[in-house]
Image 1 (spheres, rainbow, N blue to C red):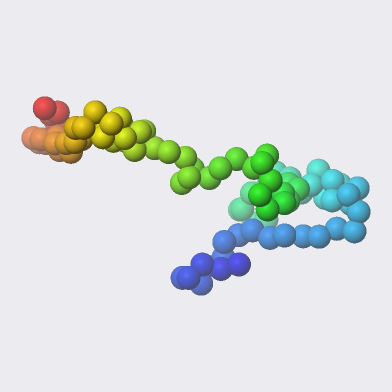
Image 2 (image 1 turned 180 degrees about the vertical axis):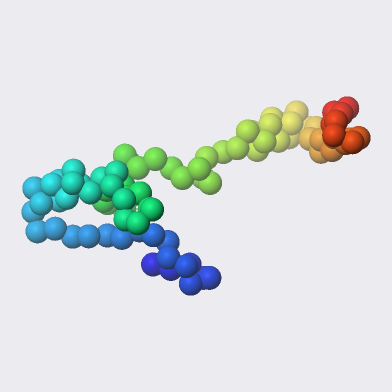
Amino acid sequence: MQTQEDKSKQFAFIGFRTDLQAHEAINYFNRTFIDTCRITSELAHKVGDLEISRPWSCHPSKKKAVEQAYAALGKRLLPRPLPIKVGAKSYDF
């Protein structure tokens, strides 16, 4: 698979005839290298499998939780002012 910029996403799916072959390949190739890229080998999961952790983009963020709490109180969350930088020092007000 490739991105829109025509770069490789650097992953692959490989099918095996038996579970034994798949487990032997995982044990052999996991944590090895192709050139300078480290390989991680694992069994594929079915779509909708509950054992799969949610991607980080789907986890509710702390900021969103705070915004919801303020909305419940009927208040609006004000943006945090940017720190003032003087020379090499930074001052937070």
